[in-house]
Length: 471
Image 1 (cartoon, rainbow, N blue to C red):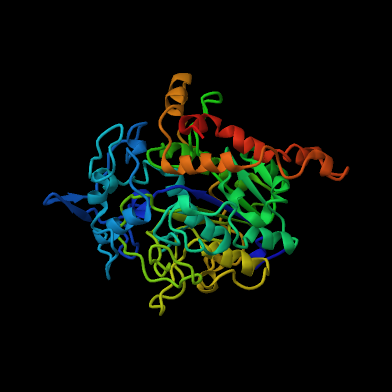
Image 2 (tube, one colour; image 1 turned 180 degrees about the vertical axis):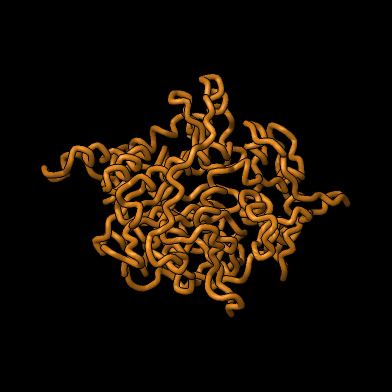
C-alpha cells in the first residue's frame, strides 16, 4: 500500500517521562535556530538561583537522574509550569524545583536540582546520533499537561475524554482508536510489547487484540523477514524481571536511560537491516515530560471535544518531549518544524500528529477529534526526493551486565505510579484471552495461535508488582 514517498511502514516507539531539554536540549549548542538549552536556564528555590546542569559522567547512578521520581499529576504540572497548583495566564516554567522538593517522602531526599539535570549527546549517543543523522523535532509537545494514560490515549484516539490523571479512566477506554480504524480499512497493524501493553485498555480492539499483539522479540523477527505491518506501535518494558535479569527500558525516572538507549538501537538496527528500510518511517517520542525541566512554555491548543475535568478543557498542550523522525527520505541534520515560521495560529507537533500522519498516509478518512483535525503531520519531514540517506548502517549502545542481585534489588523497589496503574490494569483483565485457540480458523498460523493468550501474559508479567500492592 504505497504512501507518500513510497512509505508503507510506520513504526512508533513511545518511551516515558522525559522532557526535550533533559534528553536533547544540548544537541546543537552552537545553533541559535535550535530551541535547546543555553545552559543559563534556571528555577528559583529558597531564594537561590538553580541553573540547569549536567553530571559530566554517565554511569548507573547518573543515568537514573532524577531520583526519586518527580511529580507527574495534573496539579504537579501546573505547579511546574506556573509556580502554583492553579494555572495562570502565562507559564514561566519556574516551578519545577519547587514542586520536586515538595513531593511526599521517599527512599531518599528530593534534591531540587535533580529535575534541572540534562544529558549531553555523548551521554545518550543513540538518540542523539539518530537525531543528527536524520531529523529532530524541537516543537513536539505532549498532547496535554498530565500523566501517561491521557497522553498515550491521545496518540491512539486523539482524546483523553476529559481525564487528566491515570486513576480516573474507565476500563476499557471507550473512544474510537486508530487500531480499529486500521482494522476496518484493511491496513495491517501490530502492537509489540515487553510486559504489559497499556494499549490493551482500548475497548474497540478488545476482541481482535490477541491476534495483533506480539512480544517485542517478534518485532526483530518481523523486521528481518520483511513482514512488518503497515503500522507498528512499540511499548517498552515497564517492570523489572529478576528471573530474566531484565530492568525497565522505558526511561521513566528513576529508570536508567541507557536501557532505553539499548531499545532504541535494537529497533533502529532491525529496521535499517530490514528489506523494508526504504519504505519505512520510524518515530521516537515520549508520552510526557514526567516532571523533568523544559524551558519552553506550552502553547494554546484546540480542545479535542467538550469533555473536561478539574475545569481543564485541554486547551493547552503539555511540556515538550523528545521526538526524532527517521527515514532514508530525511536529510541528515534536519530540524523538523510544523509548517512555515510565523504560522498563525501556531500548531506544534503533538501525539495526535501520529494520527494525522497515519490518516493521510493510508487514506483512513476524517479526524478522530478536533485536536487531530488541526495537528500537523510528519510527511513534510520527508525532504529527499529519493531514499538517499543510508550512511548510518547500525548503532551500538552501551551494554551492562545485570546481575541477579541487581535485578532482585530492582524488583522489590516500591512501584511508581505508572507501575501501580498498570498492575491494576492487569488485575482487571480477564483470566484468559477473549478468544481461545478453538475459536481460530484451522488455517491460522502456529505463530498467531501462540498469541491468543496475550492477556494472560500481561497478567502474569505483573504478578510481582501486584503482590506489592496486594491487589
